[in-house]
Every structure is written in structure tokens, then in C-alpha cells.
Length: 82
Image 1: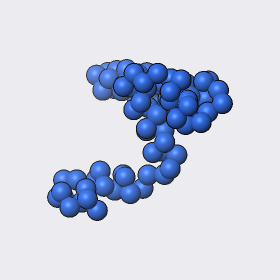
Image 2: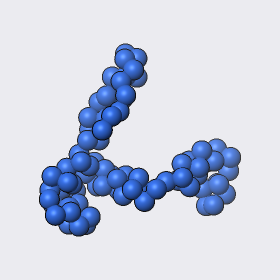
Image 3: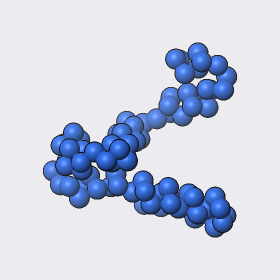
Image 4: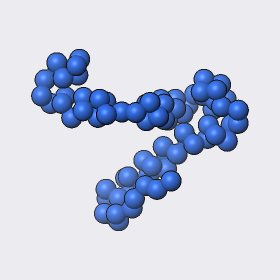
């Protein structure tokens, strides 16, 4: 509601947030922490993971950014999978 109150240009962002699942929000938070160089052990502890290998799933964002930049410039049509 607070995003929608900002005006119609915020409607699409408000819709994304309204449809967000707990899993999506958790993954977004973990990815944001690793993007900001938060020690992976701290992220693991924050999320209660038993193994650092589980937490390492949040490290993919650098590869995603590289793939997005390549697709944007070369229109390869890569898709994100697993």
C-alpha cells in the first residue's frame, strides 16, 4: 500500500512485492547480503543453515549479472535454470 501511495509509476513494483513468497523474500535477502560482501558464515548463521554449502546458493548473483549483461548486448537468449 505504501508503494502504491507513491503513485502509478510504482504500481508494478508493488505488484511484484504483493506476489512475493516467503522463499523469494528469503532468497532475495541472502543474495543481497552476499552482494554486499557479508561473510558467508554470517549469512549461514542468520539463516540457520547447517552447512555452508547450502548458503553458497546465494552466491550466484555475480554470474546472473554477467549473463544478463551478455544477453543484453548480444541477444543470445539464455535462460536461467536451476
